[in-house]
Length: 135
Length: 295
Image 1 (cartoon, rainbow over the protein chains, first blue to last red):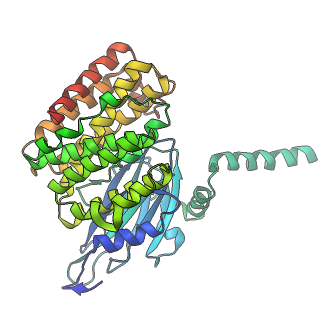
Image 2: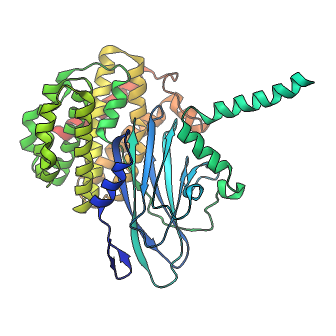
Image 3: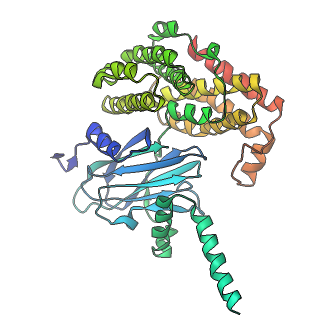
């Protein structure tokens, strides 16, 4: 991982292969690399993940390529919904963890929200990866 | 008095166990969330600057086929797209991507029905379509073909091998900055899976197959949104969005679906009623969409 003008280079292959190591015994289904841009104000980036209701899933996060830690929140409804339920937050597992996972079932959608902290000096970026596995 | 005191905690414990489900990891998640400050747990993100562009992570053809197989769906080989057709799709990025998805769905349908020889042939079709999209490396690394042959009768092993190819193609699309191709390919895989499911249901009238088909239809909304994010990337995409939207509109017009949407209820397709007329209008749209893709 090299810094370049305040940005961290995103190596999709390296990050996804790392995440894959934590997926077992779940089978690989899909993965998403999200570009995270740090702005002057705290910001939010959302990824919608459709799931099949009767299936068991593990979602692995790989946040190594972020210059500054983001908080991951996973909800049952999107950011526009007023009565959405928080299903997982990275706050619960320690703020400095770069790789973690959680398991979920009995839901048709999850919404992964990256809460991006403000940047103190200038703008810079990095990337976050998550991977979905099913059993 | 003693009995009463014991009963209350017992019910509280029973309720807690029921609500937490049977997965220890999920239970742990919930305990951790419950332990957070209540305002954090019901986190209101309104004060945060919102990034308008939401992105979408779509499932794999393999997973759709896995869920579909669990419904007890039978195997009808005549539903598969002809393997020989692959060479005629090397005409545009759209045709290449959409048929890459179609062959991926056919491969997955063969795989979960233990049709190993057919699986091998459809893997070859995927590889050919993949080569048109610059994915050679994904199909050629780690002695994939040899490992597939060696494990051909062990379902779990071949599923893992194909899942691994899926991961490699996802990485390559990412590296080649072809994210829109992933979405188009998924639209192809989804259309093929729905086509297969609707034809299998027409033949067997298995209610579980119908439930699985309806479950797949739910994905239409996410596909539309994902395609719209990349609409200008290929000239054919606005027409594809329009066709998937028609399917989504017909699906939402099913009386039982409409009621569930209005009441904001979770849909249970095992108990919901769908008339033959409602289904026919959707399956006709699926057939038309699929025919346009494979022609």
